[in-house]
Length: 121
Image (cartoon, rainbow, N blue to C red; front, side, top):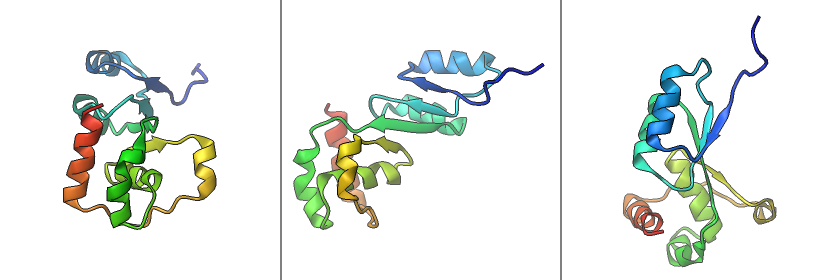
């Protein structure tokens, strides 16, 4: 007899906890929610094809200048940034009422700048 669980997610695991879980789990998590772009966890997640989600809770107004290069808002820029990094951004519902547009590509220079801003948090 099989259980009811078909998929599960984990929140903010350490790399060690996630790799230990993956060694014994009968069901590989389908999604992990991370607080930030932890390179070690992203590597494990991509290896096991686990979807990564990161909440957008930072003060993103500092990205206004870069967003202006693309005719976008800071929220649209962050959404596009995560999309290009193959990470699902978790956005507050009220912020989505603006119907953000993300049909642009961020160039490598700006991606590197945004990487540095998120790394400093």
